[in-house]
Image 1 (cartoon, rainbow, N blue to C red):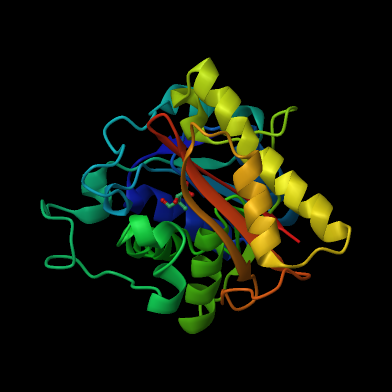
Image 2: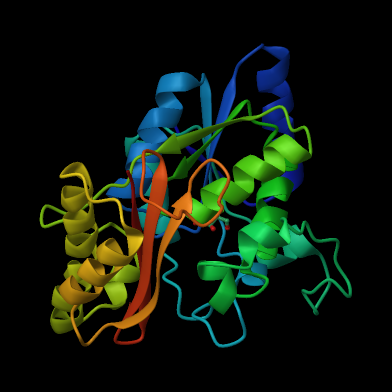
Length: 285
Ligand code: PAF
């Protein structure tokens, strides 16, 4: 039986009981609108821990003023039944007030924020979404403090987010193991995302060229081409002309520094807008 809780005190009572019974706990942090990508995280969490908590919280502080906070899909009934079907113990779905109190200005004038290092967030998604990762790191640390998990499962699709969280855990000495989980794709290759529901069929068709570009880069790399300029140009030639490319980046996935050449553990990340929908995808070589 999955409990749907929206109150921190109630969640903590359960956590305390589990801790005194020596149960291990895994958290799957989400913003809801659960799809097969999230289910793969839940399955992983079930595999490694005795108890699983899925948080469902559309976090206002990680959205910029002109982003899709209001429009972001909220499907708690669906999310609850997905969690029920997959044996989740608790769905933690707090209201913004529960997480941020009476503060009406959700910025660092009123709230304590976690600010990940500039070198990691001043690039890729952080460039066009300033303060996005401050919002992500802050809410994730709050969730970690509330749930006190042994493990936390994150999808590799949000590669920069994964890097930011791993860095926070290391730098702040959190005793939590971060479990990266592979990207889940539709049969034709489109990476699963809650934002895919925004796409018209034409936009979806164009968006598909993002995963095609990544696949092509992977193919060239396995044929021995490691010049990032050639790989970049290849991606541009595969990406549909109607997409608005935000970035095509090559980063060393252990340091997040720009990769001069593509090699093992290079993150190839693409962000592009199809219509009004901003999509991200990546491959780690
Ligand atoms: O990846 C997401 O869905 C969100 O950024 C997260 C990690 C749940 C924080 O709000």
